[in-house]
Length: 253
Length: 267
Image 1 (cartoon, chains in turn yellow, green):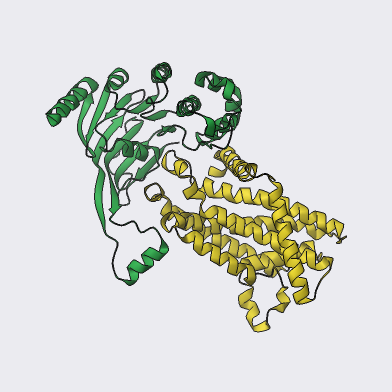
Image 2 (cartoon, chains in turn red, purple):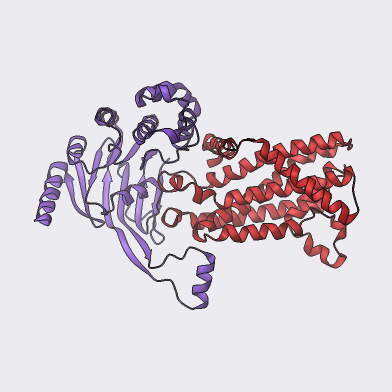
């Protein structure tokens, strides 16, 4: 299995990704923490007026949405260019190319973890009661990781052939921001739309995060079942697309 | 670590010898599509589809029906003018490109020295790049820990251990890459013009190192424009013209043919 064989390379690529990203800016890796924080403040100020819901509950609600969506958008955006950005590793040496996508998603997982640490700090500051359901956090994150990796494989492979995919994906991500329950709870969605709305795997993951971290309830088996199912489907599609296209990478890149 | 790579319509069974060759290439062809106009975006392709204009391209054979095999411990030279398919051939053996027709069989672990320093990260220090490049080459981390000083010694870059790679000169860059790459312990080496790096003294050191690798019984595919080096290192040689094998045999004869052809062409 290439994950084990190339473990060192995956680790080094992921870490050097982060170092290159943060070392060249003055505030260094503080930016990765400041960014979601500033976003939280802006969204809180605007939407607490708009929805007339405020207080620590709304802050925590927003922050779970923001950090989990940032994991998705950072992970997939990094995967889009993961193959093309490492031209020399595709053209000049042989490594399993999945390594490149995997390490990109891994480095955004590490960034996401740093943001989740802030989230946990906020949970403590606002005295949100912890329950055993917090133990579900790693499981939900693992499912989420597989979803992002599956989407990332598809995007990374297609980007080699369609170089405007990054622009298209940026638009998809902006639409996705509003189609996911980041700013509003799922209960705001009209009944007859709900079954379509819940098809979005980012939505089910967000609901599961909130259930287990904020409300201390166990997410329903239905949510788990669907999320795992969609993770496997997306991974399957990603692997199929990637394997089909990867033998022409070195010619097209 | 053995592997077989074949074109879409070829099967590994057809034409496989059961001999003990380390690398065997049978009826290998590689064709590149040269588009008249690069259409690299989804938008372009959609526009072409709506206008019912299939993209125009020329086909060009980089390799045509190439056959050869390399025995264990053999060093095979590959020579030919620019654009004759030497690098494409090595890339297919390395697994970077896939064949369109024919098959490639490789027995053992391959070290692709296709271009030294591929994958170096200019923003990281020499030290970090040693670990990065080692991981790309598939050297276990412990092994690099152990040979760390050997690498810096060989590259003569002790003083620059913590310098960022973007501040390196191209000679230093190549020296570092070569020093790490020779720490790999594969069965088959693919060397593509690797001696064109560094100054004279370092080149001499490289040749000695390659000679040492050769004598330890490793299999080497050696691409070079330096016919003197090819003659020195390789007993057998392949001459490629336009992707086809023009001559294969003892280096002296093949090089003679090549020089004769060159002269004939220039006169």
